[in-house]
Image 1: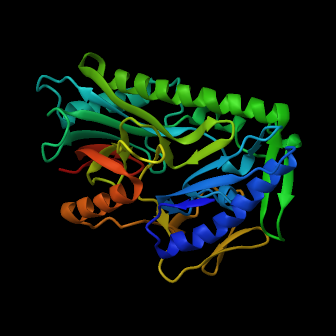
Image 2: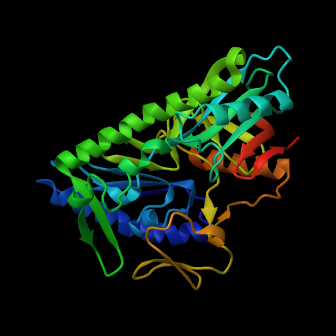
Length: 359
């Protein structure tokens, strides 16, 4: 079944209708690969929305949802989930008053230049590096904190369903109509793909730690959290913009706005936490599948594209006041069974737009 934990806005109602077809396709494949009927559950979170990755949406997968199917006799993985691992990490800075914006900027710039062992995507897309400070005296020790958001991009080519990839010849396809399908690998190929995905999870956590350690050096303090919001916790479960933890996690908002630290309430029915606000369709634009990709409004975007550009906007916008933002986050927390543990004010950050001072 589909667990609707969304805000039920216009975009999410559209996506939910399409997710029902995705659920049927996953259940159909799981049953085909088993001796008994198998089902699929989709947890649609409050940040459910469209993705910049057209290949992913073409295959029926959207950001802000957890896809969980009953383990079949023969394992399989839907490849259009375009599995990679992405997440956030937060570290306390033991600065004894000597860390400031200038020093943080210099140290980050040096690490971005010198740490060439990594594909530095800390400032690509919606990724960022931020210097933060607790707001409103909530839950965290008064100190500077370093927050990063990035993915394990060094090995994503081993995971993406592109021509010439190691598993491309093993891809199977199940269709439900002219435009809707699920592409998947099964058996030994699925198990190998899952092992790649699991290695990326631990690698990305280590990547976060090593980068922050390189920046902070002797100022490195406690690790507050280091959580993935993309990946495969199990061989029959895919998270796309969802965190699975009973510990602390980040709820990302808008560039320069406060970031929230949350966790599941004690009696929560699941361990899933939304990772942010998500992307919605522009006003008066519809979403539909077409022969070669997807259509938003009158614009067709072909499968294989990794961006839909201005045809997606950040839900809740960028102009909200701090108090309206808090009200919105409290609504999300109520829907998803979350406790708000802390509120972090972004002091400055590196992103795709360069270095910016916020407060």
